[in-house]
Image 1 (cartoon, rainbow, N blue to C red):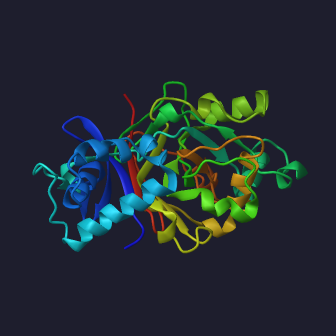
Image 2 (tube, rainbow, N blue to C red):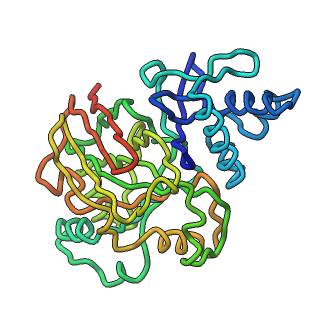
Image 3 (spheres, rainbow, N blue to C red):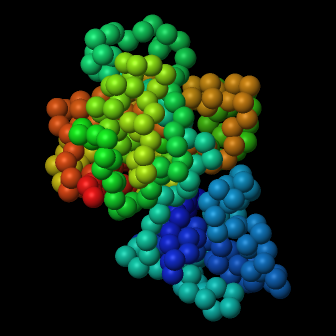
Length: 327
């Protein structure tokens, strides 16, 4: 198995990084220490914390070398059918129900691009406009607030300033390598993997903002718990074609959205090449696809209400589930 599903999880109030294997979450740092100890390294735990720290952003700073070492750890665990202990006999694996999955990472930079023409057309029609020709010239988007990111099953708290709350089903690309002025033909080399994001939107506030100054939304998408992410980062080698993945949104078990990444007008290499122009992109940068046609409640004539449970599913990645709670 050469791909790896990376997660951030919480146990005993402490956040750690791990990987999913055989229905369990394995602590990546502890398993790495166990591997190093087996290879005869006397200070295995110290080295493991230095080379594979239990923080996703710090781990990703190791770029391709860190990912290769993580895959080597997974191979080590797989060879032993998951029967692994830490270097000092520590427990290293838990069933998914025994730990709490968090957002896989808090991004260094998060940019929401607008790549689906049908959704863009609907948005401009709501404003009484047609799609500007400039939209077809360069990928456009806006920067988001990483502090709004939450994980699977964490509640989206209904903001006090809106009556019209909506979900947005989005495919997210995680950068795994530092680069600048990246050519399109090399752009996929900079992709670590993929995850799912729900770009929760206060529609009434959004239309006020876009009419007042169409520079991209602000408060309508920027509040605590506004951006669920997860459940994991699937490394790119597990996904045969990221531009042909089914995307489904369910609310209370009912399918509201059914789309596909094949409809992205701007593809992943376009986004990376554009974002990296005269700007260094770093590991831990997350680029969102924007919403596909039919990929939000507004597009299908429905909106969320308190008590709803939203599930976003993207083929090959998993399901991101969050309840909507009004305090």
